[in-house]
Structure formats: structure tokens, C-alpha cells
Image (tube, rainbow, N blue to C red; front, side):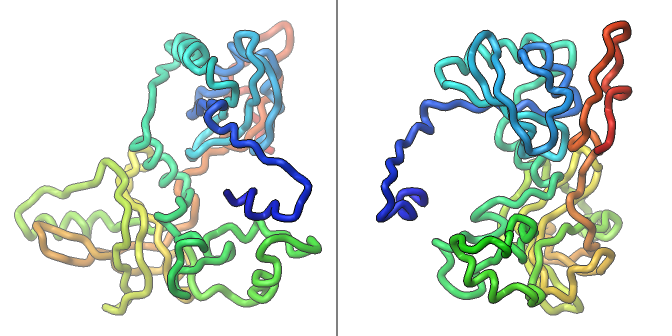
Length: 295
């Protein structure tokens, strides 16, 4: 729809082919080892956020070094008719590495650990914003790096140039819940602490000295970090790493507050996610750890 709206008065035709294309995401520390067994291209030098064409089972594919998790990963794009065969091959080759299918609930926790924001959850899109406070700029949601103000013209350029140089009034940050405070609230109620296994979504108030200064939008227990973490939008003066705030928590149907600390995003960012893999030589097969080289 966006493409069609912006193609008005242009000599261009647009065809919707989304349902003809399938994508499989292979994510995790062993993604490189599994994928290199089935694809006919050298993955060792494929850098983060780059892509290469190749073949799997003689099927043309595009391999991108991307994913909606905080770990090493690849996404495989190909004609949907071949999805089942390529899925089965990945599962078979990944058995020795403990490969497991993962659904949306697992993906939501993984993207939380990665500090990845989600449209209509962590911020409201321009088309659905009804009042000024619901409108977000890229500078407020951690996407300022995607804006090149040196370009002559692009959609939204005038508005973004007007914002350039001004500190945003709010910022999306990471919050880490103080487990001692959180567990104490449950202990007072005679209950064991309850940690959300699935990531929750919604506007949970964030306070400083009993004054609301923001709201948390996604939160949950991180199985990787063994921490209770959230993404939140807070006022500019409270976005510095180490700032102590409070967040609302419901215990036995009663609203309480517990301490949180502003932490740097992403929560989880291993070196291997953006690393390149040095090719092994012909005489000696090396391990992933030996091949791993930081960019």
C-alpha cells in the first residue's frame, strides 16, 4: 500500500508477490555451522546485514545475515513451493546441534533480549497516531542512525530536518527490574515471585519519585540473561544508563511499584552476531570459536 501511494504520477507498475515468497529464520550460536552444510555458497565472509544469492537443494535462495533475535542468525528467502523441503532439510542437518522449531512467543522474548522494537507495541506508527504525543520520530526510538539528512529529498525529510539538532523529549530505553525489590513485594503478600515466561505487551507506568515519567511497552523474563527486563519510553532527563526509576507491578490484584535501573540497549549482544568467520584451510578443519573474528 505504501509503495502504491508513493508511486502516484510515476511510470511504474507494482505487483504483490508476498504470498509467493517464503522465509525461514535460522537463529542461534550454531546457525553458521548448520547452514553452511546445505547451501552452495561461502558464508564465512557474509557480514551482518548483508545478503548473497545461492542454492539449497538446487533451489535459488537469498541468504541474509539478519534476524529478529539478539544472536547470530540468517534468514533464507525462496519460492514458497519449496518451503517444506527446505524446512525438513534444516531440521535434519540441525539435529546434532539441538535445533528446535520456535514460534512467535519464543521470538518475542528473543527480540526483547535484542532490544528490538515492534510497531504498534513499542511505538505507534504515524498512520495510527491520533494526538501529538502518539507520534514518534526515528530519533526517539533509537533509529536515528537510519536517517541520512545529507540526501536531497526523501519522505519526511522536511520534518526530520526541523527536528535535527534538538534533543528528543523522550527515548526508548532498556530497564532491568531489581529482583530483590520485586521478590519482596510477593513475599509481603505471602506469595512466591511470579516472572512472566512469555513477553507481555502494554503500557505499564514508569515513575520517578511518584511522578510518572514514562511507560514500559514490552517486558518479560530473559532466559538467556536470567533477568527481568523491559523496553520503555521515558522522558529525556531520565534516559541515562544507571538512572534509578520505579515501575508498576501487580501483586495479588494490587498495584505496587518496584525499582528498575536504566541499562544500555541491547540487553544481549554477543560478538558472534556481527562477527565474520575466517575460512578454514584445506589441511585442518577449525571450530567455530577458532574461525570467529571480531570485525
